[in-house]
Length: 336
Image (cartoon, rainbow, N blue to C red; front, side, top):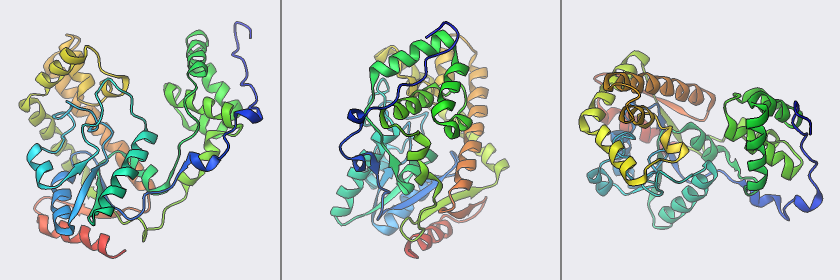
């Protein structure tokens, strides 16, 4: 390897392949109900009402609510709400830990099976689009992490830069390289790792992501809300979080853990408050940044949802009775 170009990936050898590729493909989560929508659209109260109506337990579909101690900034259901309807996939790891989408899918399947075996229905509710898509269309789990390989790529990344790493990925997986942002180092490294160990690009293993699921097998509702009103709700929600003690929550987390893990530390609401606590911004600036970043996140969620044709829209608008929306959602679920 010279000083200007990174080394090409080595070819995968036969002994690097697992005995069964079937273990790498996690099937879709059947037998469950799915309710999603952008942050601030009102999923939590609707989910509670729907779960009560259908005698269901709730599995959280929120990539940040899995972290212990991250309550206010994630708008986690209150203890009283969790007592009224059993919730799962909340508070399962510390914010210093990594928790991948594959870990989420595996654990969600386990929870769903346990609930169904008890005779209850399962309502999966939350707004993390990648997790939702992985549950209704299946997920390629892939080989286990090769930390020696990942560390070597990290070193190459420092030495040659992100553009060189993306160019390396383009050699083995041009489809994914065209989709990924150069700053998305984690996914670039994972894609290189999969290509090395399987001899096929990650985009090949993720082809099922492009095939819509059967609506009859995956009853799914998405809350549809006017963007202007959603932005107003987001701004009010952020103000409520700050008033409820988001700053104190962040200070408590930092005191307990010193630093948060990479994923938790980048959560909207927490990264801005960490900067404030570390005196990098003012409280007013942090507040405005949380609102702006939350609106941007909601926009990205909506783009994802439009690509999931399985989702049946449920209109949310000012003055619309809760009972009417619950009836519409349960009608979607009971029609399948």
